[in-house]
Image (tube, rainbow, N blue to C red; front, side, top):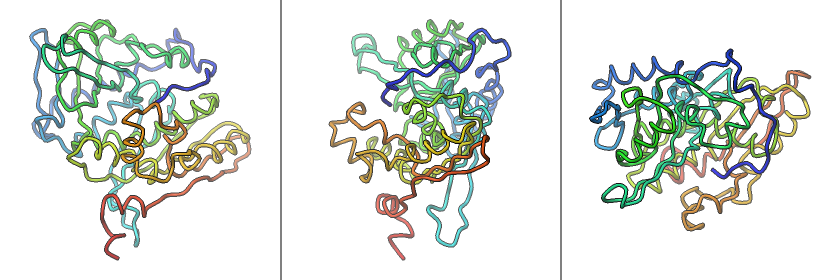
Length: 345
């Protein structure tokens, strides 16, 4: 997503020893992914130097359970991600993802946000050029993004995990870059690959519904330490075999079907976010994301950054005890794109 035009004050001291290590907290989740790889339909390979690559959707099947675990890894062990069957009489969608965290800034922006751009030329790979966005706790080891200076956070754990949203395994030149920038020994890094058009990839992207809200808060220039608690939900669509359509479905799930509840400190902030946070405030709102993306020649940076937000927000103020509401869900658009009950009733 486009970078924020503003620079909020740092939310934490980078040398504060009381801040949790997102890599340490997610380490047991990574271990579970590797130990249960067979059951989760995740394929493991290891480079000659010992780096583990977990394939959750390139050649391996992966699945929803793998995606839920990977989403929790992405949040640095600071979030809850669960699947819920929607039993309402007229459900928005039969299957929903629920996300919550009591450390929203660190979990979502310090770990989960897909902000690390990793690329290699065809000359470097010896074949096809490579590009992926990296997300997850190892970002906080490398701190290659300006966002970390704003957060005032850096992790210094000796193990790390990074999730790559790409449809091929990373070449050695990219692995070497990650190791160098993170300052890790090769056998202390786990790379998890989740193509968006895979089941696990779809899960871990839709599980960003709260992260997208936090990023929009950042774009609006609201001090991030205003946000104390966050939860949300979004429908889990079936993956599409085409990469652009798959990306469109995961974005639509949040832009038109995502609902987020934030708890902030001050009443003025709560009012403002209820008005300005929903995706409907964007000039590009109202069309399926794949159509929007195609109309801008596949250039994310031409899309209005205000679009990247949940459809509906509820914002509670600790100062006043009031809760403010903004935006609305658009189930008709989702059902038109994905099929389902709205097309058959």
